[in-house]
Length: 346
Ligand SMILES: [Zn+2]
Ligand SMILES: [Zn+2]
Image (cartoon, rainbow, N blue to C red; front, top):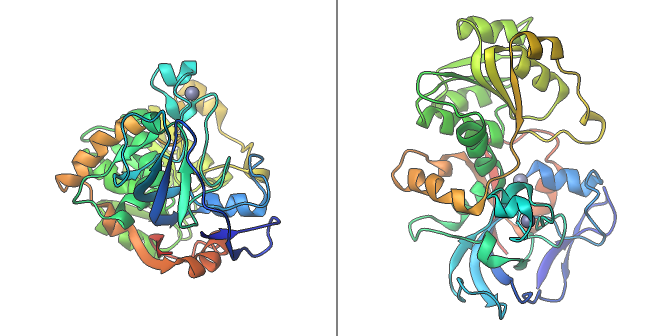
């Protein structure tokens, strides 16, 4: 098969012919019909992820058609239209038994712990635990765009932040994660304030449901600006970028007993950011993470998509082919594109 392969970190990947994957007994091979390009792929490519062994094929936001099925798989057949959370569970550890496959003790991540979906085919383990059936009406590009940023945002806003109607939700950073979170928070009835340094992204944030915006490049103090807009601070605030300054601002702009959810990844030199812990104590703040979402929770999100309450297709910036994915991957640290880039031609 054709795949995007890198043989060293930070060296441009190349399209190569590599052997087709075969399914494990409990796994499947999926013919990739669409795969998103994500900043996590960039982190992996530059060497921030200790799971990656070289040579490597990136890609973890995928949707496709089951091509081959292992002998122990019960629920899936060749031809099924599927997607998969970016964190796969083993199905047999205490976290999986408690329903928290997103933090499985023996988790796998296509594109990190094994070869991913910047390829014509990808192997997925423990298919009965991890595959998600796609509704016929959901196209592959949109389904792929859910894979990491959208589901992580859904879990962050709905399951971790528990944002509800009438609450203020602040979203710091309006890339793929942030725009997803804005759409989801708006859909559950929260009032959303979006924060970014790009007027273009803030405009898109408004179109997706933000009722107020703060341009962080134009105000002297971002938390004060958010507290003013929200008349006392956000009930739930997300760092959707993953940077010490947006993390600090997100915690600082909470009202008492508010929840900060860290969604953007904090890696390498950003992995131990300063946080205003005195405020966490005095105001009884909560600090939470969001690490993908369990396959069984996709149902609620897919229902909201099918009923038109969520429209993730609006977040797709452009569709490209496998060759173009190389440039797109290497450029993911520059925050240039608006919306999610999806590879749809292999
Ligand atoms: Zn597990
Ligand atoms: Zn991703």
